Length: 389
Image (cartoon, rainbow, N blue to C red; front, side):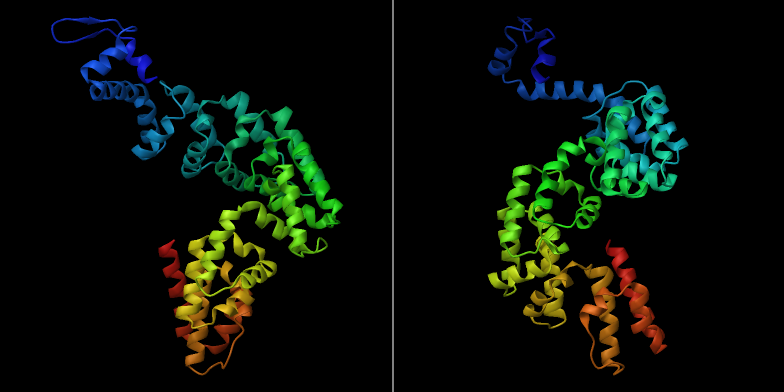
């Protein structure tokens, strides 16, 4: 694009010397040191070519100039009529302005589809299923890939296959799609079959497989050789295929490489964990190894340095790392600490405190004491977390 656009034009230099647009273009650039000028010239051409697209995305869709420029690299149009019809289509079918922006950002080429021939039949099919229009808009805006696939040859067969395979209701098929677009856009039978066969060989209960397939479909569509190797590794670690933890460990190891395992291990070792502690924690709560290093460090710092707990205690109950520091750990432990300081309780079970639903927590640690300060403290900490988010 760079050289072809530039060399299509006659170029003159001081004195009227005429440079051939093809045979001497590159020689001119090299010998007369005008590359910076050429780059600016070509950049202006590119800018002009996409100026309408960028302007439209800013003025009609509400994108920032930076986002609009980024999107314009993936899509180009010079008139508004067709794109206007797509925007109107989504608005008329219950998509909010924000949802439309999300949809466009994730799949810009949707703007070039024919609303009546391509988009409408798909929405009609989805609306025929047992799912609310508001939920459908939320799912399709967050994962719009399905709009670019053929309804009869791909979407409908995939929908029916997944529903029958997992014995799921319609809403659970959409839930699976939200997590993994391949649920409605891939040949699922060929993707799932070899990996599910491995699990059945190991004796994993069918009910476990199907429940996990809804929430973690992507894992079960991974490369077959990698899936088999990982399943063997999980079994060697001592996980029982007859228990749910086997599949959870499999999902965790499928998502991380050896180098990632080492990085996470090093993050734990900084808090005094040994290799044995790490393996033990993984056996108890495999998902501890797919938490971000930032989350691991933040949670360990709070538990050890703020609460004064021993690092080994967290190794014994690694699922404590999974909770949100701002939305659950700090608000709840702040209330518990207040109760201790007031002498209203003498001890507490942190595992129970963290696993209670919010309603259960309030009923056990706030409401019975009829102390307005406790509820105020809890709500203040939650409010702080919302500001952080």
